[in-house]
Image (cartoon, rainbow over all chains, first blue to last red; front, side, top):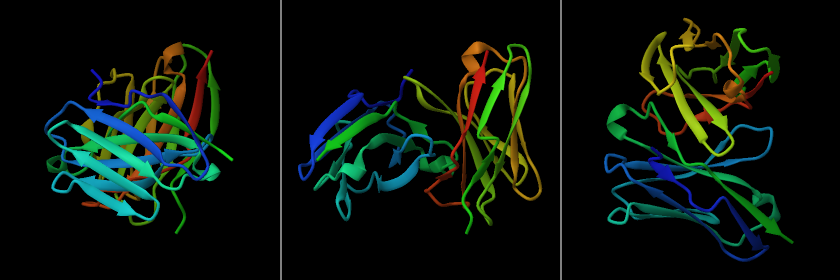
Length: 114
Length: 112
């Protein structure tokens, strides 16, 4: 039972354009969400997060939007750069578990072409 | 600060054998989690340790076990290896109460 879903396995975008990566979840107890980026042969690195009390969080070129009623979040990268090419994982957590367990989606491979 | 260190980076084992993977967390981080990454399945939570105690466990068979030492280093053991255990095993550490988990580079296990 996949509680966090990333339905697009891959996304191709041109440099300078916007990349939008989507994530859906089913567990209404999730109240904190994170995005991780992963390059081949490396571990995931934290990008940006958002609490369920917010609907938007911005950090430089990265913005995460949360729609609680739709159980949907998205990561926007503007402008996209070739170095952003990686696999992006959405993760969710129940805060009352002390952030002990991250539930990840299956990832979206982003390719940004020059 | 040094990052999360996992050893070995690569491992090839035969079905039926057992394997032990090691993880050294970032200095000061007492929480260590383990994840399995396989194609199409994303990262699946295995277990989490804090102060030498397992606090949370994922839906994996009992062949998967772990432990944490007093210096917060952690080991993960898989017994009676199966072909389906071939995966990238990732360890993550974090400070208690913080949201961000820092991952190591992982151990690529291949079972033949």
